[in-house]
Amino acid sequence: MEATLTTSIPGNYWQWRGHSIHYVQAGEEQGQKPTLLLVHGFGASTDHWRKNIEQLQKKFQVWAIDLLGFGRSQKPPLQYSGSLWRDQLHDFITEVIGQPVVLAGNSLGGYACLCVAAQQPESAAGLILINSAGPFSDSQPKIQQNSFKKLISNISRSILLQPWASYLLFQYVRRKSIIRKTLKQVYLDHNAVTDLLVEDIYRPSCDPGAPQVFASVFKSPQGEKIDTLLKQMECPLLMLWGEGDPWINAKERGAKFRQHYPKLVEYYLEAGHCPHDEVPEQVNHLIESWVLSVSTHEE
Image (cartoon, rainbow, N blue to C red):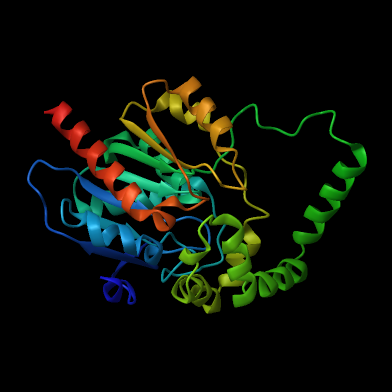
């Protein structure tokens, strides 16, 4: 089976607002079973779902897409934001898939999926968030923050807003040795940090426009708050958390999601920031069971 995971799933391209968008599709329509759309996190691509598509396509029709600015999609000089990716996903569901889907997103991709489910509800039959990113209303920096630290933070941000500085940082973090080091910080199981995974993340960084996409992160508006989005949402929600994520306090964020959307279902896994890639068998099983239970309940 490992051999099937060494190459990328053949993909297709869709033109959106004059830009080329890469996506993959696997599996056949399964009657009453919902269709899945998988959305990667920052710096990743459809390749990051390789282990999930391999299994989930046996039970569902599965699509995965590269957000504009990432993977094999084009990287134009735009202001990137949750609302841009929300529109991309909604239009893709409408124009290409042609029916509501269960959206599944990791990290940044989770936030984009949440924006779709909340603000374009006709596109979402359900939502799966995997160590999802995004701000809550009460997650602003504390006023009593050390003034010196705040000053340094502001100076650092102002420097990174300079094109030369963000370019130099980009050239540093895109080095394969740094990619591997970063992955080992966010994966509990270092055996999951393979040469293939490093290459999957490195390759798009060589594309024209990639440094500008990276720089736009420091300039983008923060976007709608998660609690506001949850108030607008009505579809079923499954949350999967890698408890060992050094970037996200999973238990704390899980409690906030429950506070604003009590009817969610959640599981905590022994994994880091990307449990779908680190413990794919567990994640695939939980997704399959939940999606089938939700679709059966709706019938």
